[in-house]
Amino acid sequence: MYLDAGTGSLIVSAVVAGAAGLGVVLRMSWRRIVGFFSPKQRAEAQRAAAQGPGDHDSTVSERADAPAEPRA
Amino acid sequence: MGSVLPEPASFRDPDSAVFYADGRVLRGLSEQGASDWRQLAGTDFFPRLVDQGQIVRTAPYQAEAPPGPRGQSWSLVLEHERIPVVSYPFEWPFAMLREAAICHLEVLLAALEENITTKDGTAYNVQFVGSRPVFVDLGSFEAASGPWPGYRQFCQTFLFPLLIQAHLRIAYQGLLRGSLDGLQPVDVRGMFGGLRRFRRGVFRHVYLHSVAERRVTSSSESVKAELGRAGFGTELAKATVAKTLKLVRRLEVKRSRTAWSDYRDTCSYTDDDAAAKRAFVEAALAARPSRCVLDLGANDGAYSMLAASYAQQVVAVDGDEAVIDGLYRRLRHDGVANVLPLVMDLSDPSPGLGWRNRERAPFAARVRPDVVLSLALVHHLAITANVPLPEVVDWLHEFGARLVVEFVDRPDPMTRRLLSNKPAGLFDDYRIDHFEELLAARFHIAERQVVPSGTRTLYLCEP
Image (cartoon, rainbow over all chains, first blue to last red; front, top):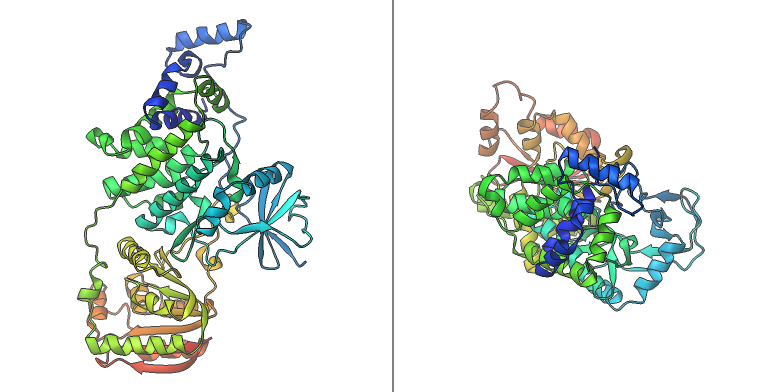
């Protein structure tokens, strides 16, 4: 699985910001973005996302289209 | 308008590309890039930081704009002030990398006050003009929204190298040279095992970073949107940057004495020798004004400092990080602005790196000296590094500059020490008559002087 390395960094940058940033991180909808699930739960979540009409992001992202970050 | 050459490192951003035309440094902007520029030019911080020297001086290019090197047609073209000698983070000692990091964060913080951010955070956004860091990537400024997108790059190319040097005394230069993207969080986490993860700045920036990178698997855009919904705005981005700036300012390296940092105390010079050598070098420098002096094997920079009064720019290169770090701190303390100190093993200088090996140029392509100082260096290359003497002289000749070179002969205590580490007979051609023949075949030897103790000879050579 290819992970978009920039994703976790965004969350860490919020934690780095201090108490207010930590508050933001805690208010986030973690189920949508964190891969803390067991493989079984993850498969269920994917099925739910595929069936449901909601705009849930898949917990498993291929990110083959991740743009290279500009270097300079 | 003569030939238009692309800057090989400037191809990732479709809205902004640097190229060279008639010796000028130009930046072409797309419609979007031009709009970002107009916003930037209208701020208070931009002209202020340009005047303070923290951002490279930039103005719209008045003459007719040439098309881009790849045929792009620009909405607007800017002209940047030229950086005299381009250098890279893997050539900077600790104090320089830290100062470059501070420059980047201060520029960003001032920008965020006016709701502008930088879209990246790489150490390659900063260059040095002499001993002063300057932010050069004008194309990086854009309207701010949510978290700082450059945070990860900042960690990988600035913060992680500083952390491993400050806390673990691991030299980062080789690691940065090994990858232009810098150090990965997971690799740095591996260096901070056990209780080390609780050293200043490590737990959040390294440990959490590595965990989050592994756990968070959705796309950047969805996380950004989710953070926005939870209330992450510019104020919080400012807090991220301010806290990181505070950390960077507090990082310091603990030094043990290296072989070179006490060199001046233990080397084999008498006072008479030192005075004679200094007078010879000073006379050579004073004879003609020079644009750029390259001091190879600069050590503590005594001769670079001397050259600074006679040349527009001096580049001081040495393989020892500790002495170059010390030199940088002294330059800043004494307010000497026109010396650029760099860490580099001269028997293994910086190569071409990145995309097609062209993105970052090799050292020899970046510095065009008109005077080269090679003092107490040849014996180290010829004996310690086993470079054949003709190769050493060829290399010195390739700079195409006037040369002040010192030959330390076999009876000298330093040469004897180096030779004693090598099998007998291996360096029989390391002799002054042989060296002089090699010099004379490539240069015109204008002056020659033996220092009073008789074991060292100085030459002034014209190409």
